[in-house]
Amino acid sequence: MFYTSTRDKTLRVEASEAITRGISAEGGLFVPTEIPKVSLSDLQDLIPLSYIERAKKILALYLTDFTPEEIDYCVNGAYKAGKFSSEKVAPTVKLDGSASILELFRGPTCAFKDMALQLLPYLLTTSAKKTAPDKDIVILVATSGDTGKAAMAGFQDVDRTRILVFYPDNGVSPMQKLQMVTQEGENVGVCAIRGNFDDAQSSVKKIFTDKAVGEKLAENGLMFSSANSINWGRLVPQIVYYCSAYADMVEAGEVKLGEPMNVVVPTGNFGNILAAYYAKQMGVPIAKFICASNANNVLTDFLTTGTYDKNRKFYTTASPSMDILISSNLERLLFMMSDGDDAAVRGWMDALSKDGKYTVPDDVFAKIRENFAAGCADDDKTFATIKATYEKDHYLSDTHTGVAIAVYNEYVEKTGDKTPTVIASTASPYKFPKAVLTALNGEAPAIDEFDMAAELSKQTGTVVPPQLASLKEKKVRFDNVCDIPDMEQQVYDLLHI
Ligand SMILES: *Cc1c(COP(=O)(O)O)cnc(C)c1O
Figure 1 (cartoon, rainbow, N blue to C red):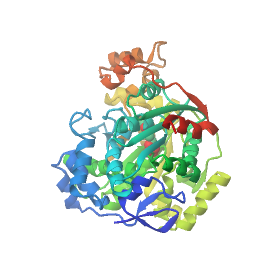
Figure 2 (figure 1 turned 90 degrees about the vertical axis):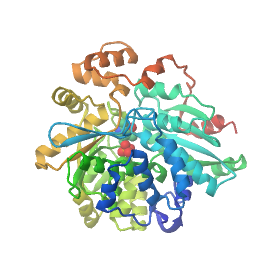
Figure 3 (figure 1 turned 135 degrees about the vertical axis):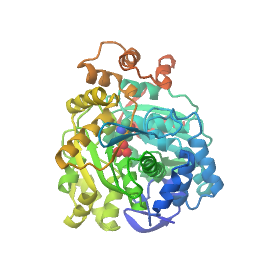
C-alpha cells in the first residue's frame, strides 16, 4: 500500500516515509491510496483479543512496509501493561439510553492524545531508521493544551529525537500548563506564545516547510517531523480504537454483528472523527458521525451549509482543546469526498489561506451530509450537561466530553435516531477541575487547582489520577514566552544551533 498527498496525487510514498516527513513538501497531507478492508468475521475475531493484539492486526493493514516484528515492538511498547489505567486501554462505559462512553483518556497524560502519542515515537523512530538513518528528528508541536504534554510524555528521552512545544499563553487550563512546564527529559523544550492556537499552528507549519530553516537543521544533522494530527502516524493509531470499540459494543450486546453504531466526537482539528470515518471505510458498521463543537462552531456551520468560513470571533472556552478555527484534517476528508480531486483541494486550501473561506460544490457536500451530522454547545449548555449526566447516570465527564454529550442529546431529540451510539470521551475531568466543579455546583471555591481536584474527588467519590496529583511536587522547568515572529529563533535557541 502507498500514500499520496491531498495536494498532489501523483506522489507515491511508503508509510514509513509519510510518517517521517509528517507533511508533504507542497503542503498537502499524506493519505492512503486505498483503504484496507476488514470483514465482519475479522471484526468478530477481534472480540477475544487484548487491545494490543487488536492494534497489531489493524496497524499491519496500513503499515505495509513495517515487518511483523517491528509492529510487535511498536505496539507492545506503546500500550504495555501499567501505562493505561484500564486493562482494556480504551474501555466503553454504558450510560442510560442508547449511548456508551468510549474512554480514551486512561493514558499517562489523561487525554485521548495518549492513544496516538504513546505509539507515534515508536512508529517514527522505526520509520526514520528506514528513511533517514543519518538524521536526528526534531518534533515541532503547536498545542491547544493536550497534544504538547502527550507528545512530550511519548518522546521524553527517546533516542535521536528532540521535541519542542509551543502553546498559547492564555489558552490552556492551569493543570494543562503545569503538565507542560514541569515536563522532564533531556530532549524537551517548551515555550508559551502571545497568540492563540491557530497562530501557533500556522507558524509551526510555516517554519516546518521553510526551505532555509530545513537547510540549517540539515547542516546540524537534524530534520523536522510533526507530532500534530497532520502526521499520518498520529491518525492511524486512532483508527484502531473505533474498530476495537465496535468489537466491544458487539461483545456487550449493544449491537449485533453487522448492525451499525453511531459515533459522536468532540472535535477540534478533525483528527479523531476522521479516524472513525476511516474505520467505516474499512468496513466497520458506522451509520452517522456526529461532530460536536464548542462555541468555536466553524465545523458545525461547514457541515450544515457546505461553506467553511473562519472569519469569525475566536472564543476561549472551558474546552480549550477544541478552541480551533482551522481544522487541518478536514483536508483529508475533502480529498476523499471529492474522489481524490487534488486540484480542487488545492483550490479550497488556497482560498482558506487567502480569504479565510471556501465553499464545496453540491455533489461533494451531499456526500458529506450523508455521513456527518453536527452540533455545538457553548459553556453554559456544556456545564448543564455535565451536571445532568452526573446526576442521572452518575458519570462524571470533562468539559470536552460534556460538549459531545450535549450535542448528542440534542441530536437524538431532533432526529429520534436511537441507533446504539459511542460517544468519544477525550479527557479526564481532573484536567479541568475548576470548570467541572463550576458545572456541578454553579461555582468553584477560590483555592488552587490541586485543592479543587481534591474537592471534586471528595464530592463525587472518584479518584484524582496520580499523575495529575503529583504535579504539585514537580519543579517548573520552562517559563519562556515569545511573540509569533520570534518562534523561529526560539527553535534555534531550544536546539542550541
Ligand atoms: C485534541 C482534543 C480534542 C480534539 O480532537 P481532534 O482530533 O483535534 O478533533 C478534543 N478533546 C480533547 C480533550 C483533546 O485533547
